[in-house]
Image (tube, rainbow, N blue to C red):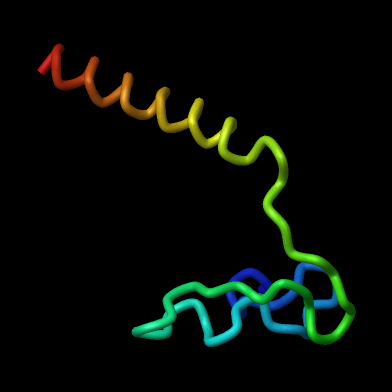
Length: 69
């Protein structure tokens, strides 16, 4: 529920985004820290490496299915 409400994963009270995730001009601007508990929001060090492998696997699956089709 905290993820859907865009709240802090630790305390579930502070906001994750400064202007809301769906603000028309400042789309998804995250806060640096939680306003309630002070948790520092940062991306995990290997986040982009893991995303690269997942993206590669999805693209290979799409290309193979298009080739077979």
